[in-house]
Image 1 (tube, each protein chain N blue to C red):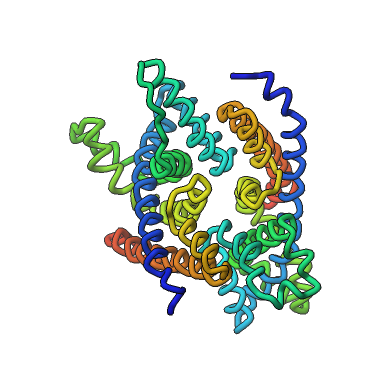
Image 2: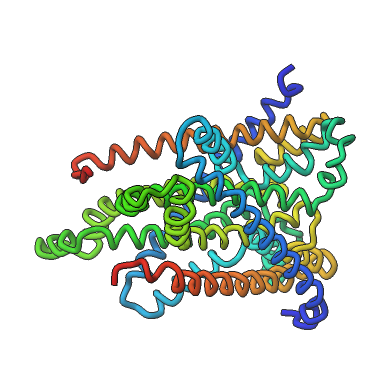
Amino acid sequence: MNLDVIAESLPVYLNGAWTTVQLLLISLLLGLVLALPLAVLRSLGGWPSRLVWAYTYVFRGTPMLVQLFLIYYGLAQFDAVRESIAWPWLSSAWFCACLSFVLNTAAYTTEIITGSIRALPAGEIEAAKALGMSRSVMLRRIVLPQALRRALPAYGNEAIFMLQGTSLASVVTLMDLTGAARQVNATHYLPFEAFITAAVFYLALTLVLVALFHKAEARWLKPLLPR
Amino acid sequence: MLLHGFLPSLLQGALVTISLALAAMAMAMLLGLAGAFAKLSESRLARGVALVYTSLVRGVPDLVLMLLIFFGGQVGVNAVALALGYEDYIDIDPYLAGVLTIGFIFGGYLTEAFRGAFLAVPPGQREAGLAYGFSAWQIAWRISLPQMFRHALPGLANIWLVLLKSTAIVSVIGLSDLMTRGQQAAGTTREPFVFYLAVALIYLAFTSVSELLFKALQTRLAVGTQQGAL
């Protein structure tokens, strides 16, 4: 182990870790915002539900790397895209990575929330109806708060998967943690040092995520469970 | 012409992807079984090793592990070869590196799936085996494993789908899989959207067929069990 090289490239790793955290937070946040209405549509049935199902089926059935390449390299094939006002965005690796991560995690999150809406005890919904709540009030006050709490364990898994998934950003030239490790390996040709350091950073970030979700479950989920 | 004549090349790549995924799944199942036995064993050492293994796999991205095994393996193998007096440079085969990495990673996920499934087999089954004088090996092979498998199947199906999709990253270390073939065709024809869409559709076909097969298998394995009706 060449510790000097690791110490010397620590700033590169820290920058990379910050990029990884930003990518993760943006994709989780926007993904959740997108998934909430989609999960409601998916639970209500009818053709919107089938449309949402098609979206989640395609995005869950294909690798995220292919989705990223479709957006980053694929869209550039069309002149209409290259001449549109969105081109400055769509030609940026950062934006395309975020876009594909958001669309991917939103698909999984939609299915997770839909599943926990479906698993709600029927009595809770009957009680809301018996009190004369309208559908939107029922969704806002009963269904979503209850479903989101129960979705926490599965969503925690998805967040950890997403942290690992952000490493794909390095394939489209972004300097996230994996990108930093690849640069260090390319400069010094020390693969063990380069990638094990990145792995340690990822492990630390995973532990932080696990601890955060543990806290969230203790705060919001535990009071619901039978004692 | 359809896909400018690149369809055969894509299909060859798809074959590589499937064979890689199957080989990795086989390795993952062996590792997963060993891991589950270790986690359920009485030995503290075995439990500790299994815990480190599953947390490592859960906490480090597959891409990082793959680059570590590919580039690190290259350096390591050549250092060992040199120490043994072998002068030629050895190249690590990306297929082998891919199978080893993906098998290693998903062995960790399967460890958890198998452990849960073993626990779902009623203890009376094992005890009945003991009462008949079965050896520990006979109990595992004839009683626990066959019954465990039915409980493990939903988790197994899920992990297989994730594994199949994560094989796409072996393109990064230069294996000529479906993804790489798509990249080559996209570069030659300058029609990246068409070819990445084709690649996506082939992956979607694989995952769809897998889901159907697992559903059939689930029905087959559930023969003779009672299903509670609501």
